[in-house]
Length: 435
Image 1: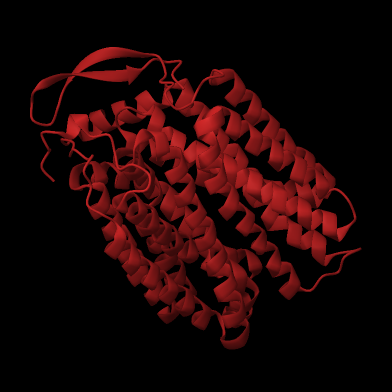
Image 2 (image 1 turned 180 degrees about the vertical axis):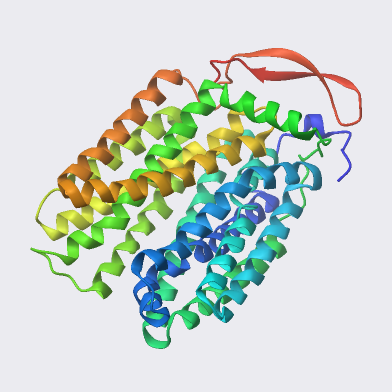
């Protein structure tokens, strides 16, 4: 896409405009297509293990390899998006993922299934980070946090839809039918994304910078304390969140609850609270600032999870709803804030956030099982709450009290750089303490 002469003055689509609505709707459908496919096999792991005659750990690889594929490709996708455009890169990724998803039920062997799932995850890596960069370039700054919350709401609906569709279908007709049903759902969502999302106006293609330029861009983000704090937040909070959902089912299936698997699968309905709070949190940033809303989300997580320490099922489920809502509120703020802090290389900044997010899911989500198996649910709860408190302290220390409030721009220093047309212009860069 050629650069536009008025791009330096582009302030983004305002809330209430037709383009604003199309962007939010299109990215919500992209979130559904992405996360319905990414976690689709989680609801049918026992069915898959029985049909393929594999262990539970082997069946779980269909999720792990998909998330690993996503994690390792978010950064390459971000650099590609800098060259070909955000919308085109997302269209390529979502199209490839839906085709691969439709091939998954046709896998003739378990290794082929794992290979397709990893390729599917790699294709899906072209959505999460680029979507946030696209939002920050196309939406008016005053409403960017709310727009990011709407996108995260779409991801929660996608993750929930994939599980709720796959579970009943898999129980009736097997895991292949479940995978196909989710892929059809994702295909419909992908088509709606392609139809709705408008062309970019705030994007300027970047010149190829080679390996050194890429390393310089990533290194600059990792040296920014404000961004680094958000990456730590993503790693710790997502890790604790996945650990809770991985092992709560084991607790509820044992004494004194003894719930059947079908009932336990309904705990994922708690994701609906995240659908609400992720949008709600985005709106609250205009009054209280990103920092304060993020800290409030972490507080909700800890308070909600503390309720799961009781032996009263109603309180445990209520605590899970509050815990989930708090997590997605904090996540929506963190994901959107990366694009606001990064003046340049926004797609790479968001990619690093997603890399930390999915690494936390893989590492802490797995390690939480060791704590649960050895020391029990109370020890796991203390661990997850400690992760939340650590994140809150880091956020409070690194980001000043006014950080993230509308109209409050972080302290910057002026530098000179060339625009894509080769003309020199003034640019701004965050100081190390920028927030």
